[in-house]
Length: 550
Image (cartoon, rainbow, N blue to C red):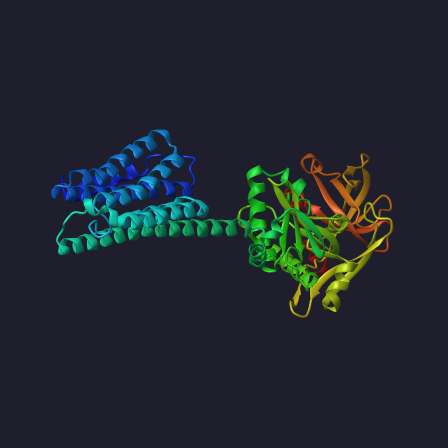
């Protein structure tokens, strides 16, 4: 067996001894206390063997029993600890032995001088008491140590009859040996504690990094730092706060998800959120909730923002422009393109941690949240709609492309909302121009439609005609008058069975043309088969138109 094998074997056996009494459920702090007690007992036991052997060598057989007995009693204590796991009793016993026996050894050798200040070994017990016991109990051990020291000083002159005659040079050697060994043991134990402290710091740093990584998916760095600096902000409770709320939604995604495999739906959402979340965090928005394919974002809580409305609008514009990248990735993966609508509302709400002491959530509560959702429901793909309150809060920097009055569900009077096309000033962004030309069809396409009110779809199909087409919308003549922002469920008529079985959806966005009941409808959900059919119709119409021009 070579030296390396011997060292490895020794380390393994030492670790087994150190780990006696440990339980799987013990905390890192408790395990450190266990190990410190074992280290202290082992090191002092080595000292006990050393001093017992010296005394025995000089014929001091009775005094040698005290350091030897310390080693034996320590072994007994460790065996008991291994089987009982009773750390509280074992640590008391170990500290008591480590304090009493050095004083008893001093008395047996005739006092302070002749013993070479061997009582200083009891200092190690004080280090141990402060390490794995609370300060109050440590103070009691200190008082016991000081009491024994004073008592030893008082009886020192009365121990002359037991004092051994030792050459002064040997006494000096004893002093040096005691101080050197005690200092070394204290250094080793302190080094162990420092190493464990550094390990604990590393674990705290790793946990902090993990928590930041986890919460970084929902909060910006600034918001996280604000919570770290003020942990009381995480307590249950709420406060009134002026905030700008953003609600986003993928148009027609529910219908689209029914045509895709579950894995594809998750893939699309993850790719979409990957880009959108980064942009929200860039503007210090607080992602309050993922609601299916929708995002609920708060600007102005928990961190206050003076320019929250402008930040929210700038963020919304960047998010809409980023949909180009989202769809580019979708196409590369063989997935359909999607469009997003965004609604913004400036309102006073109650924000705070809501839930129970075991599980809570930073949430926003108030009618303004519902209104934001209502505003978003009026959007079509690529559109940003804001409330009057956002327009006023953001100021003159907004570029307003259109406005309309709406009567959201639950409202007692109409509200004015605005379509935002850009923002100037500090942020200076504009929406990518997505204006698309309507193509006159060679043949109008008959269809059936039903009006969707809330979550209810009309049962009766009404006849209509598709007159002109663009990539994302159509000019349509309906069989009756409908209100703007009405959602429609549509089905092609007079086509093959495969196409006529496919439903598609749209939103009426404005009246169009001079003919009665003719509207511009933006598609909100378009199956790939219908989309391909419409593209073919547009291409055919373009070719036919070019032929006529020739």
